[in-house]
Image (cartoon, rainbow, N blue to C red; front, side, top):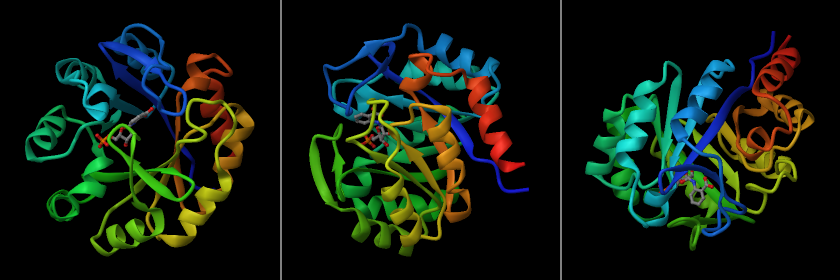
Length: 245
Ligand SMILES: O=C(O)c1ccccc1N[C@@H]1O[C@H](COP(=O)(O)O)[C@@H](O)[C@H]1O
């Protein structure tokens, strides 16, 4: 039996609300109400993971730290926490939520020494989010260029980074399908597991990602497709289970 693709339904929080953005652009929010209710909905549907993002912290427009801690604390499932984790204090607050791992974006581009240190200290509790346009990384709410994808990947690999969360910004929030070519290329460049993010629109997209598990794709973040009810989480879990049988 092949390894099953892990599914990570996303709850992105802006100004206290669960939202989805298009291309990660501030101002494109569609609101989906209470983040806790959204997270509990995915948990009740059988999710094993939650991808929980503090978008205000990522954009530098404040934070939702207490709410994020409340959501993470209410979950029985595994939580991957992202957004604004850039120094010792924000990392300590993130880990104190009891999350399974954190996902660092901007810090990996702007403070590589600190990221190397926390990778050495925390091992697989640290993932790095590689958020790209083409092959150029973007940080600070995806508003600033942050270097070349493959150079950064090689550096992080050499520092022992445990896994990567790869987002094609051009696909994120668009329901246009994941960038399979990018994901194949990243998997070819690292031996570490890769979580795919951006563009999932259908069960066929999830089946295509499940087909990349042997290359190193470990999981897929699903956002807008679930909120737009393109399929249910139960259907998604069944679809990836079927590929692994
Ligand atoms: O998830 C989004 O839609 C998103 C949009 C714009 C910016 C960030 C976004 N998401 C997450 O934020 C972290 C990066 O945060 P930081 O740079 O470490 O502060 C990234 O990993 C995405 O998961």
